[in-house]
Image 1 (cartoon, rainbow, N blue to C red):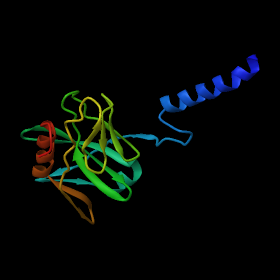
Image 2 (image 1 turned 180 degrees about the horizontal axis):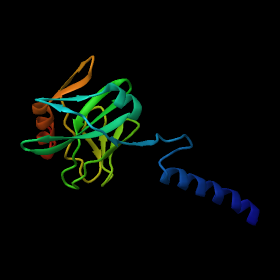
Image 3 (image 1 turned 45 degrees about the horizontal axis):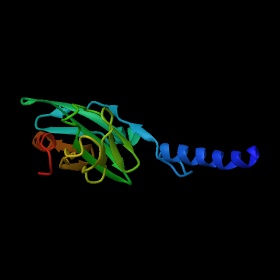
Length: 161
């Protein structure tokens, strides 16, 4: 009788473990922590090397502006480059990881869509990560300080701009 009870209990424990770990038997996407890099400021533009993204997948960089220092992030997802403000105002985080097609706040765990920047779940969901306008040249990804500041300011306010 004890042997007959063992198998269903074991199967139930396996099922609970899979649900708790966020899987159904398949492997979940690994979380890729961002790397802090230097993105040189040259006048009114910031330049990020494409090799930096190739080597790291997701990076963070700070820009010193007259208004203050702001943090931004850049990452590649499914062959597309995204540049966004790197701030989670309620929890004061300046760190995000990429997990599959989601951005995960390193401080509070709030999840955002990596494609749109919109909040998916978590405490800071009302503060979407605003996109930075950029262009690509032979030298890399070029952003204006105005675009970086605009995205940063838009992310400080709840809702979408």
